[in-house]
Length: 267
Length: 133
Image 1 (cartoon, chains in turn green, orange):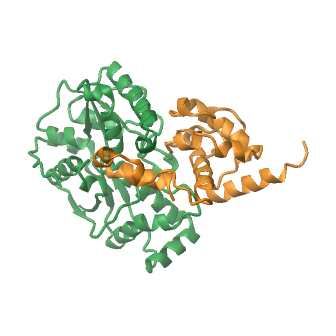
Image 2 (cartoon, chains in turn orange, green; image 1 turned 120 degrees about the vertical axis):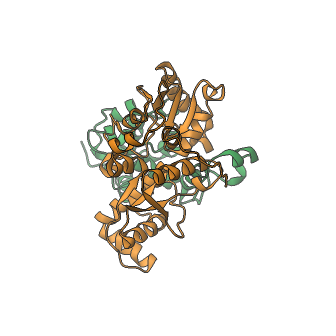
Image 3 (cartoon, chains in turn purple, red; image 1 turned 90 degrees about the vertical axis):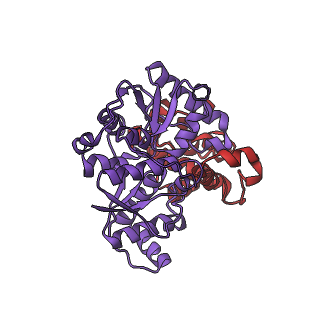
């Protein structure tokens, strides 16, 4: 099946290229076709929480209009992109006034709903865990991996509809399929401090450190995430710097388990 | 109970316009505060921000550190029994401070070259989106 792919700014930069490289190699191996959306632009990184703020919805709406017109689902890897695209789609569906204003800005009629999928949903709902399991050539036996969800994929759950917001399991199921040992720990859905890394880095470091320590105490060797900012914050902790725990993008253990040789092409 | 004072009415109407949230629906149960991962860095608890807004005490909220260490993680909203979205209320408070004065809490000059080099784009875009207008 064909999908449109929305990379977002961070995956094309120096921080998260390895998430894109590994994930795209993996879908090719799974028989899916992800075509990069033409002329995409930054989603804005945060969903505007003020109802009067319309203009910042135009950029994600532009991607959604293009996806709806193509009839293909829109897939992203970065959890912030997915969050913004998904919530913008929900808003377009339910808020006629906003929809009309955005259509005026874009000088285009609203083309209807675009299906917005995160890559993990693509694996779970389109590929299916069983089909993925059959492709695993190099099970990650003995690896103790903790899932780190962060905030953006799960909340607000009424709009994201990603998984149970308090007891999610998609990442644990995924780690299981790859043959690794799932590490359960309480802070897997707790915020890492996000963009406070820019203005209040001590607060972000404290928040991230609590999460990393909890994962370590629960026996994790590796923590895996779908969010470049989460990864950055977790990697800034002394525990990660000292090499006590490895922080990865979820697509990295995936490509290892599929035994793919991923070219390290940095942007 | 007498009629609420005008400042409170005006403030709550302004917050509602921006956030769509009814601050007066808060019953002060403290679930938001119990779940907040940033609460240790806050001078006012999320619950106290709600109470001060209900009382029309705009001044105390405007100078508080709390809205600026809120990371919009949406945990408070997920657990509020009155279904209030506190993240949007905090955003409304930030906008109230940022917009009228065209204040820039964060400008590129505030960041070291090292930070600019190593922060992911996502952090820069969201930081500037949240803390400058």
